[in-house]
Amino acid sequence: MRILISSRLLVQFKNQANLKAAKEVGVLDCKTIISPADYILFVNKKPVGVIEAKREEEGIHLTMHEDQTEGYAKAKLRLIDNAPLVSAYESTGEVTRFTDYRDSKPRSRRVFTFHRPETFKNWLQDGKSLRTRFLELPALLLTRLRNCQVEAITSLETSFKQFTPKPLGQMATGSGKTFTAITSIYGLLKFTKAKREKIVFFVNSLPL
Image (cartoon, rainbow, N blue to C red; front, side, top):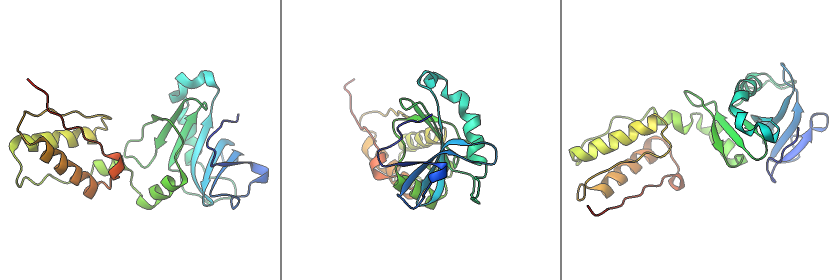
């Protein structure tokens, strides 16, 4: 089954594959030692991910196919001595779920698009995923922090470690919300290598 993955991706059939033809190549029906995978993604000639393509009506059942995708990700490719692939997708072309196997406890999440070649390159260089680095956040330094700020930042970091998608904190007026946010952002930038453009804090004061 064929799906539109990306306008940047050069899709090739396995018998005509030329990994030098583009930065990002998807090989259709790529052979593994267990069976052919729908797509294997290559970036700069290196295998980085697998896509399991499903019919549109399977959009609500994509999680049921994760074991199959994981099998392809862990399998050796024919004629290539590759390590297990770090990324896996299940997609109908309309609905796509993604799993990062660098996570300490990998689990899929819905994404709106397939990742760019530059993203795969950064992941391979970093080694650890952002979720894994959340689990390695060091103990908070208490210098210059009020008790309520310590509690807010600690609770926020606990939410990150539990992979809560949109953690929310509540602090009283005058308690130092802005300094709390800045302190938390600094920790994320320094210790988790989180990207600046990915960190969004809303600091708002509401009348009682």
